[in-house]
Image (cartoon, rainbow, N blue to C red; front, top):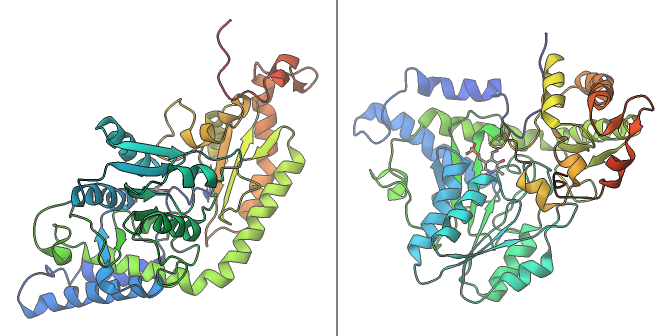
Length: 412
Ligand code: PLP
């Protein structure tokens, strides 16, 4: 059975062009880039070129402002722990209620350790409450960390505006954004609209580079202590022998994404919009999570009332269709996602949410296939649901009454 891969916010397939660019550094050019002999010059030069490429494609950043890491989780941890280590006198942090665990769990860890952390709420569409954001900022705030786009819903956050507001409150507030879901999908201009962003994280495996490579932009002059201490690699900012092939692959993937953006964007948007409108038309009691907010064009998160996401994913998988019921890190747990809870998705739907995320490689035929099988999957699961009257093929009255409830009903 052919796989229909619609889980690109979890990870992406590595582009053949990326593999090709990486191969020399996995084979004959394996030398340690820090060594002194002539043969090491090739890998060292390749890292330098990749750093220039990545910097340029993020809006003409300086090459020295790019730090290569192992993943976005490491970039995020470096950004947060590196900032607090550099300025121990400040202990107030502002973040959002919908961050990926790679920030959310770090923020909760800091709160447990006595930092003051404000988790700015979002509305039912997942949009950040700007009033609450402004009220949370204080002159003594150390760090603000708000993601550029949410991995579960695709909702895009107004980072240019939020970073400007933070700097107006106090220019020394450090502004970090987790751009893991946007680099390669949305243009990022660190000299223009993102000029107030000090730290920006992302990961290769979301944009057709391999897993195990990430990057952190650190604007010149930003106080950020190294997170991994060791050798002098990365200009003394991260110990550890550089992952040459993967660094080269990351730069190649960014180049490809930039070159393909203008053609990919409208095609992927049309595919996602068609998937959305067809499913909404064919399935009753279905909502689009974040549907009224500005969203990444590749993401569709739908809430199917009265059924369980796990059941849907299992049945999709029987058809070879790969999707997700939340962030990859939280799937497997029975807890509904903190993102959907923050958006107050009703109790009857929060467990039945499914995310489809498209990519450059998604075809119209694959979208057709999902439109064909998904309504029947939902219908068959509803027939088994205690909230559904299978004889009349409608929700039970008591289930309808719960439609607006966000919390689990108490056991009676
Ligand atoms: N941040 C966001 C928004 C993500 O979507 C992800 C991955 O799902 C991460 C961070 C973590 O990325 P990595 O797997 O590279 O650590």
